[in-house]
Structures are given as C-alpha cells and as structure tokens.
Length: 397
Image 1 (spheres, rainbow, N blue to C red):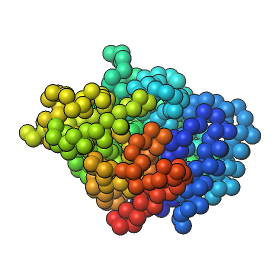
Image 2 (tube, rainbow, N blue to C red):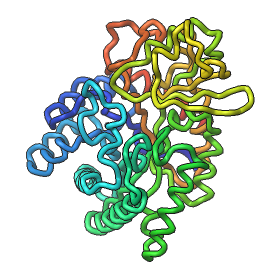
Image 3 (cartoon, rainbow, N blue to C red):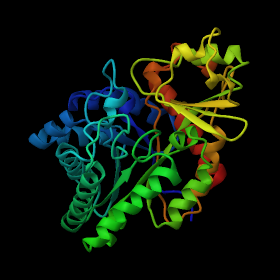
C-alpha cells in the first residue's frame, strides 16, 4: 500500500476562526495563497469551533458561502479538526483546549454536528475524518467515572457515524488524537489500554465491529516523538491491535541536546516558552529514564538554574515547528522521527488521511533560525511546509 491519494491537507487552526466570515477570510488570505504557490492540489483541514458550527447549522447561506469559498480557491475538504472546541486563539489556551472532554454531553453533541457538516461538504461516496481530544487532559479534574462516561459517549458517536454513513453515503471516522500527559498519550502505558477498554465495553454491548470501523486514532508525530517513542513501532503496535489510524498529523517537535551544557540552546529554547499553548516537555536521561513536565518554563532554562532536569541527555518539547526544519539555530527538531513514522504509515493495508498541522506560526520565535524573512507571509510559509511534506512523501512512497 502507499499513501492516501487525496490532496495533502493543511489544518486551518493556524489562523482565527470564530465565525464563518473569519473562516472564509482565512481561506481566502492564507490557504488560497499557499494553493496558488504550489503545482499540486491541497485540501483545507477546517477547524470549525463550536460557535462556527452553530452558525452553519442555523444558516444554509452560511454553509453555502463556506462551500463556495473552498470551490473558488480550488480547495477540497475531507477532514475537520474538532479538537479545539472554543477560541483557539485567545490569550491563554493551555489545558483548556481539552475541555469539554469526552465525558461531557457538549463534546459529543459538537462532534456529531461537525460530522453532519462535513458530510455536506464531501462528494458522494466520499470518506472523511474528525480529529478530536484524547478523551481529556490528565491535568484537569476528572470524576471517578470519567473513563466509563467517555466510553459511553464514544460508542454513541460510533453508532451516530454508522447511521450518518447509511443515510448520506459518506463514511466519516473519528480520529482520537493522543497527546502528552493526556488520557491517551504514550502508546503502551496509556493509549493501548484505553482503546482496549473501549473495545471491551463495545463488545459487551454487541457493537465492537461498529466501534472499530468508525473510531480510531489521529497519530500526531510530534506528540509521540516528544515522549521519545519509537514512532514506527508505535504505529505497528496499533496496527497489530486492529486499531485504525484514521488520520496522521505531519508535525515536528523541538529538541534540545545536552541542556545542562548547551547555553546557546537554552537561550534559544527560552523564546519558545510562551503563554498561549501548552508545551509539555520530556527529558531523557543517560540511564534511559524519561521524566516530564507539564509546560516549558523559562525558569528551568536560566543559566543560574540548578534543576536536575538539566542533567538529561536531551529534551523534547511539544511545540509544533515547521516540517521543513531539521534545525532551528542551536536547536534540533524531530524531522527524522517524522520520516520514520511516514515510512511505517506507507506499510499499512489502508491509507490514513494526511495533514500538516503547524498551528503555532502566530507564536513562533526566531525568524532567522527558520531561514525566513520577517516579512514572509503566512500563506508562503504554509506553502513551504506543504511542499516539504509532499517531497518527503514522494521520497518515501
């Protein structure tokens, strides 16, 4: 098998989208510019916040305007990012991005509405996907029945997607996205046990086949690489368990080698400690031990710090950086892990949807380290990422 034949997608959560008008503006200003700069078709992986979904559900004209904007700029849409529910561009997102979680009614209602909208954007017989939160973040309060409630809602979602498929002819699958320090995160310790529990509950209800068909994972390469996983082995493990990978996020993380002695690297990494998004940080030590911190903190990187975390061999940080970057000045990226993951994806017996998701451009530091002029437009940067991803896929596939 090879990679998906669908156009390579780029997630539009990189720019604000609180209304349909803002979505259309972002597509016209940024995604269309990227499309015009490339000699191959691309897809818009729409992020549609709850406020946008409400607007689309209440107005046929709003949905028609969105469809027209896509058509006018030679864009298709087969996948939605239904992970951020609210304003993904507020001053502080951090752990709030996991709320509402899958134990809540509002999460399932929102996701069902997203699926309904996507079915209207897909062509007859088309297949779509919805990436979503990893059930919830372990840093947020959870009730004792949290996981059981999540399972109940996810099973309801699978049944909804089956019915939607039967009624519309469009097959849409949910893609649960593991992320560091969340309910689904590391493959062996968290993701596999959680998914096994889901299938066991579905089996008890006589609907395991439906759940396996319509529910799977979004494998974000940055997220798994941050935890120092062997990403190819992780993908193979999910495949052996019969867990579909419905979507792959083509993403890079930041790496700092020898943090205790690398003053230039620490100074560069300090610029990535910003207040909007959560940047889970993992350290790997010489004895193989791995430790983690919930967020990247400036105080841990000061030259005066005596923190034992600095004695690690290397750090990896959940900060999405451009897929074309192998280094960022004195910092490195997980570009090698990205290539290894995609090579393993190509060995699957089916073709997951492929999407570049670098939502951090608005908070990205270090223009010179990225070899980009300060005046380079967002659309141009998106085009460079898509070209780099397409070149990598061509080499591997």
